[in-house]
Image 1 (cartoon, rainbow, N blue to C red):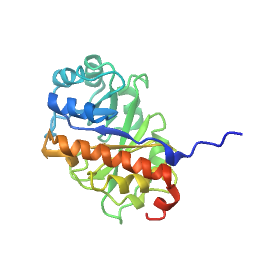
Image 2: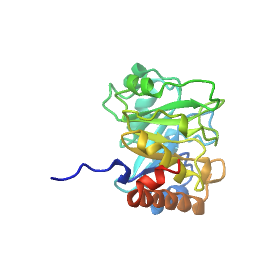
Image 3: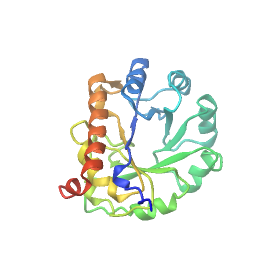
Length: 240
């Protein structure tokens, strides 16, 4: 009888977000990431137009997914962006309701994920289990730090505040760097179906400008965490 697969042995998917330059897209692909994100929110310092996002997305090889990030955008604009980048996964990072996410994704015809903004202040509760249930049509829930504006602001929330079990695929974001992503994976992966990680400022030399060395260091740290968890999950979990 074949044993059930150990969820701790799963490969952690990697997304690099906030890409604005061709060389950064190429570096991310060369480093082995699974997805790259383009911010279509005009107030972001990493904003790119739909035309620019489409240009950059055309550089991607098969099986590397472009992700389009929206903040409280109207469905017509989301649809126009999807026409320009037809293979994209949608990321809703504002105050969108489940109904608005479904409408903007064409009634769920396009895959999408929803950002959950976790308060940095431990005194402010956040019910991630209920949030995931409300957004059950989402492909994943991205957990990010709640700071002023939209986006994690390069700050990590306390990962131990996440519930011990969330019936969803999670994407860990907010303040990740090559130095702390291993700890994030160790702490969060046992709490969900599968885990991916999403980094932006943690691999930058300036806002919107990625650092090739940091990208490679980040990917290496994720792969090292996967290898360690596969070899000795109990020992690693005991350190969290």
